[in-house]
Length: 380
Image (cartoon, rainbow, N blue to C red; front, side, top):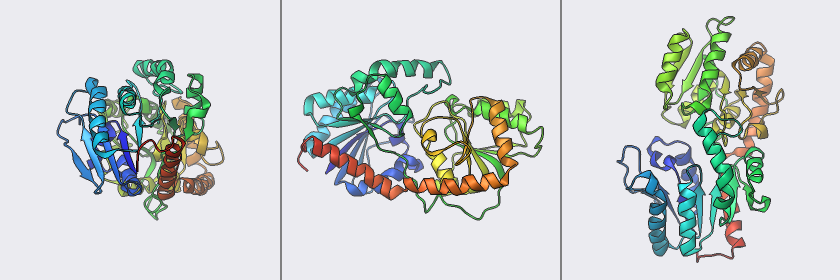
């Protein structure tokens, strides 16, 4: 069988060997061929490439606002050459992927699955842009999904709740997690705990890093040598650097930048006592499960997959979007090593449900079922 993926910017940065690359590394084994249509790379340099022998990348040569046209043009050309069986569409505002997929479906009638990994601004908006995107999604998603075979959600509760309120029929919603954890990489390691806290992710407003820095400032009153490691980069880098200086946290916070690969991420997690995740909205994030797999407890806000895997006081700690509450939850955990150990043990158990190979196999099997539902719209 053959697959077309209509993706976002994640497909333009596969050289960083992040989450999307690691998924394809296993996922490609189940397909005769995978074609990926993506936007133009930010630096404009990425060309058509082949990965793993059967994954073909098709970045757009045009500006982003023309992406629906590129999806239609390249998708039609690819279908005429390859006769793919199904389309996976990573959808998010401003919805150019879904619009392009709908245009393509109108021509070739090959079934497509919308993937709503993340609803910007839900459950909480970090800024005005996220607020606008949340309302735009609520208004558009019912129409957007009307021709789709299914709408994939990656967490059990939060995104489905939003979609149902927005008019997407329950029968169209399919829960298939997208968190493929390599338990050979993300595992407990006998490393010295160099950091009290670790944050891993893209540095943007949605991640709530202002809250985290304010919490560290407060924690410093009683824990003068508290250490926070921030792994990642993004548009907030310089603002965070300035805030760290203004709060006099230069000796307490390390801005590391991107980790070189998954192993380095796993090592950093193992060198930390607690992973803190302060996002306002998420589909996952994956790093919560990666930390749990390493036996490192998590303090997180109630977003994405967090309600699915963390029971407050049993397998982790849930914090409000408030630096005072965040500070209290972190301080309480750091002062109770027995609870840290308990959360670590529970986290390892939970993470086994997301083992990479079995989770990716499940994804393929679910797509097979959807293709069968349609009666096999294209020859394999």
